[in-house]
Length: 108
Image (cartoon, rainbow, N blue to C red):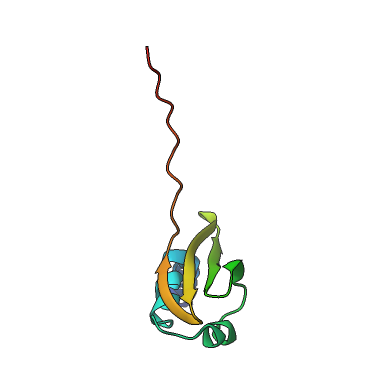
């Protein structure tokens, strides 16, 4: 009986720890695999929920997708990507671009 309880406890502990270790980058990687370049914007919006439209005009649209996970060790972790559409079709996926830091040149 003791060995059964010990093995049950060990199995439960392993399952609990392995389920808490899901990394948002892994989830994002799986998401990107399911959205190939050339996917229509309508199909993208049908498949996924929670995306945020950050820019749109007659030709271009940009969506931000954020995936967050929670575990007891690292608490909330998140990863994001921007999905760029041109003429209604996916053209590019990346993490966005930072604006160049402004520098002041001092002349003596």
